Image (cartoon, rainbow, N blue to C red; front, top):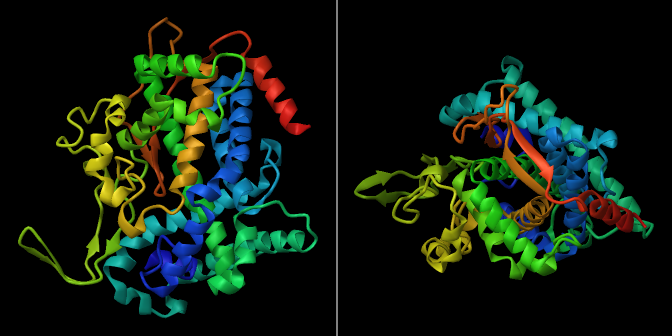
Length: 412
C-alpha cells in the first residue's frame, strides 16, 4: 500500500493484480523481450567498454564506474539518450534521488501502512507521511513526464533513436495508457534496474576476489574464444558457456533482493495443512530458495560449474524461465526486465574479466586483506556487499590501448 501511494498505483512492482497490471506487464515484456533487447546490445557493449577504460584510469573507483555505466545503459535504452558521462550526470542524480525517496519511504512506512491498512484513511492534514507521499508523487510525475515529452518531441521531428519510450509512443492507442501512465512505466524501469544490477556487479567483483580459480577458468575461456586483440562481443556469447554460468552463479550466490517484494494472496490457499487466507501478506524467501541444499548441495560456495549441468535449470524451470535461480522472482511477477539485466551482466562481466585481474588487496604491512563474503548493506531496494578492498590490474600490456581504440571507433 505504501508503494501504491508513492507511485499512484502506476509502478508495476507495486500495482495490484488485474487488467491494468496485465497491460503494464504486457507493454514492459514487449519492450524488453529477448528479441527487443537485441537492439540495445551495441549500447550495452559501449557502456561496458567505457567502464573498463575508466577503471584502468582509476581502479579504486571501480564501483562508481560500474554504477555510472549501468545507469547510463538503462537510461539510454529507455529514453534513447546519448551516453551519460560522469561529469554530466545530473540526470542520474535526479533518478537516484527518486530511488532514495521511494526506498526510504517504503522502509519507514511500509510496516505500519501495509500491516494496518486502516491507517490509509487517516486525513491527509493529520498524516505527514501521506502529505510527503503525495508531494513526492507529484514531483516524480513531473520528472517522468518531462523525460517522456522529450522523446515525443524528438520523435515528431524524426530526431529520436529507437528506445523503450519510442515504442510506448508508437503503441499508445493499443496499450490504452494515459501519458502519465506511460511516463511512470518508463521511469520505474530505472528504479527497478539500476540499483539491483549495480549491486549484482559488486557481488561479482567480490566473488572474483574470493575465488581466483573461478576467475582464471573464465579468463582461459575468454582467451580461447576471444583472444587478446579485441573485446568480447555478444556474438561470442554462445561460445562462452562458463561466462554464462558465472553470471547465473553471481545472481544465485548473493541475490540482491533476498526477501523480494512482499505480496498478497488473491484467494484462500492451503500449504502443508495450514490455511493461508485471502489477503495474507507473503514474503518470498529468495535467499533460502537459492540455497536449497537439495538443488545446490554446496550452496555457500561460488561454483559456476553447477550451471553447466542442465539439471539445475530444469529443477526450477516452470517458474523461472529455466534460469536456475529465483533472484528475478517467479511466476507472473518475475522481473519484466530480466532479459536486459542478463545481457548487461554478460557483457560487463566478460569485458571486465577479459581486461583485468581482480585480486585481494594488501595492507601497508604486506598482509593480505580477505573481504567478508557475508557483510552487506541493506539499502531497501537492493542488498549490496559492505565496502571492501581489492586490487584490479590490467591483465596484459595492450589492454588500455585496445580500450582506447574501442572508444575512439565508437565515437566516430
